Length: 141
Image 1 (cartoon, rainbow, N blue to C red):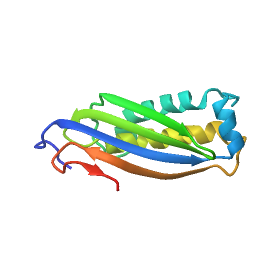
Image 2 (image 1 turned 180 degrees about the vertical axis):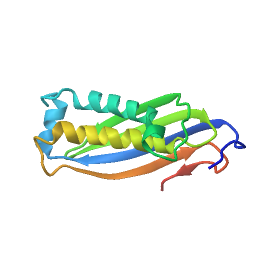
Image 3 (image 1 turned 135 degrees about the vertical axis):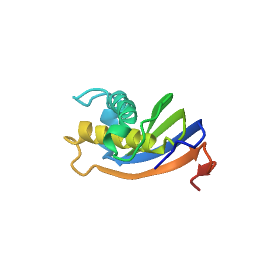
């Protein structure tokens, strides 16, 4: 779509994903005993790189300047919770960049842990918050 007449505003999006894993695999992650390396550091790096490449991966996404990407992890009993936050001054939203960051971080967790849990599941990738632009703020309730 033509975004030429839209105003540049500060845009932010937060996306969450969850990866279900056996409790024993969560323990391996916590103790940094996964042979491929530190799962959360690797997944964070992969997610940041992915956010910056979103326009190359998704055909109708506009390339936009990204000023901030952060990915946080929370280890639960049988789950890795991933939250990706993306911000930037742009004419269009950054939610696809946040989705891409979160999805690639989740895929990286899966890849690094699959040898220990063939039943691992990536689930519920969802937008939690979006702000900036004409449509205002969206918060998942």
